[in-house]
Image 1: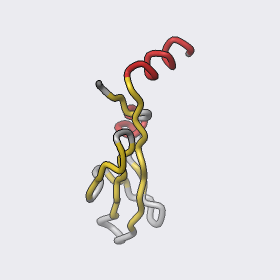
Image 2 (image 1 turned 180 degrees about the vertical axis):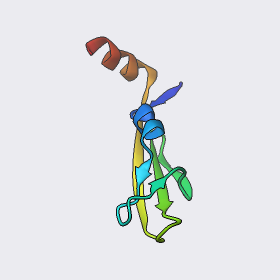
Image 3 (image 1 turned 60 degrees about the vertical axis):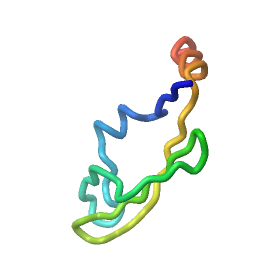
Length: 71
């Protein structure tokens, strides 16, 4: 079974900005799979040291195809 990221294009085109200083963050410090379809990323700003977490939720091929057809 393959999975697709829900917001891959958005993440690649617009890196996460630091919530404190606005500096663009290109890569997470570390990531972990919380479940089969959820990945948590921990970010740390090199400019100011601020840390925060984000989560990416994935869906299976069938769900991705249904969403494309509905759009």
